[in-house]
Length: 312
Length: 300
Image (cartoon, rainbow over all chains, first blue to last red; front, side, top):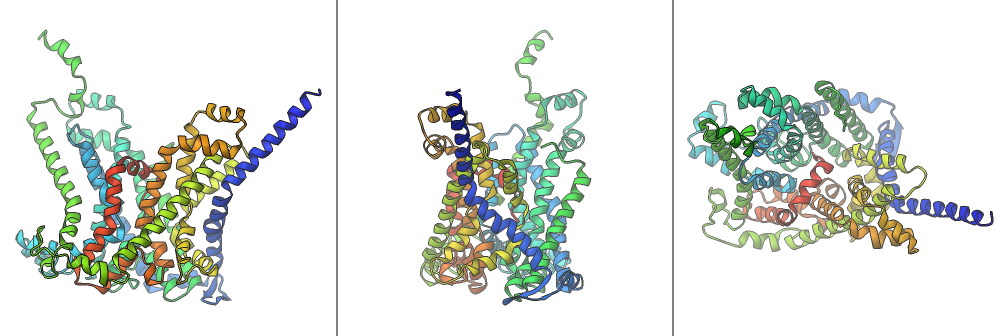
């Protein structure tokens, strides 16, 4: 007895000091997360019900900010632009990334080099790449020169693009050029995701297909593509979330006003503009909540397209 | 006939993914693959080489498609170094100090929290960890207004060096850092900690002297991921760094693009300075970048 009692208290006090150490170790991150993430999100919801300007809340508006969004022409343009961007960019980038992954996954020399090369644009600064892109597709830029040298100007002119077409500052092509830019920079990342899923497919399936005499085309469409479903789901979800938040490239190419003529006004750009130019904090918060809801809906929709989420 | 039978098992799966050697279709396909990969790789590198070449060109020459500046000039770099506001060394310093600070806080706070979530037992540990992961689902833009009000409320949007703290505070710790480090600590055997405990080491000493050195691969991955992310970061600097001398490279570049519309050599000099440090890191620590992808996902 005399031995056990002090032993128990030692265990208890050791437990307590371990718990205290644990709380101490996580205290600062948790404090930051609770204020800057969780708290901020709750506060954003709260602000969205108010007319809220530089001097704080002035009038409780209930759902009026949200109602105003539905009839706000610019916001609807922003939604349309963002959806267009996402609906074109996501499949395009997935196709490019998958193509790269399938080819790189073959037994070829220099696999490591190609993998590294294709991923490189993804780690560079989005602003730097966008400025470089603007330079390349500017009226006197390399792209227009190269298509002239290749004798393609007639073809482009047939579609209404003059030899010195300004791809980024023309409302017809501004968004398209951002889509191409981002498909280029993100394809390497998607390739890495797909490579991981490709390597998870067992060799036996391919052996069986080879025995059955399936050619490469059939093997890809009948076996590889369907078996990559968890990969498709993951890539599509990650790209959708990223695509709906498109901002950097739109801002660098078109500034706060989404020039030309709101062609580059995306939802996040509009949120940024409402908050920093109009100082309509309540309204801007409502834009953010709607974006969050759209992203959430989009991921639910994807879950239905690709079936249940993979086990991981 | 008889020689074929034992030969087959010696080369079992070259024939599985790629058709048998000598098959002409397969060879053509392979050449096509090399051609495609080579062309796509060029598409990745050529624009960057082109920005380097352009930074050494004169303004009129910058509109000519060529990789060899004619004449070769340092004027673009000179403009970037002295004329731009802020000048290149200033933006470089701003970017470096902010990225270094964010990297440091993520490594320190992330490894402590990661260790606690992996090893220390305290009530509420699992729900708190889920709370940390939940923050990954909140888009940055959604918290723009509240975070801006908070940061400006504590007086960090100003014209003195404490302005840097605004960005550092918001990026000080990311759930990704905690997650990566926690996963790594989970893989370290418990024996070492128990040995340290028997030697009378406290929790902090055990963490600092025993566990932290063992976690260095994970720490390196987190450090590189955070340095690269912060160096390239645009959204929060755009929001908080309103005093021109505090601009980071991407932030300054986003403004110069409208102010120096035809001075491509100077703009490309800034592009090169923004990209080069990350390229160098990438060349040396490629493995960590690739490992970080899965954890960090894609930012829009």
